[in-house]
Length: 72
Image (tube, rainbow, N blue to C red):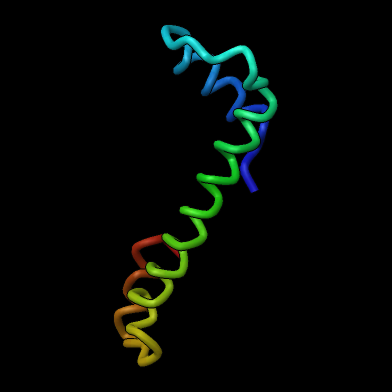
């Protein structure tokens, strides 16, 4: 779940030069943007999970190498 406060700050900075319609509240815009990003993020995680674990046939040697690169 995204930190709404961080997203608010990000959007406020990025939208400075953009006019937002009066019938769209800032809170609604922040929430809609967060939901959009979270949905995309979940799909991205699923895709990366599949490739990391070789679509259900993990290469454990490769996984160990990745763990070593992380310093663990």
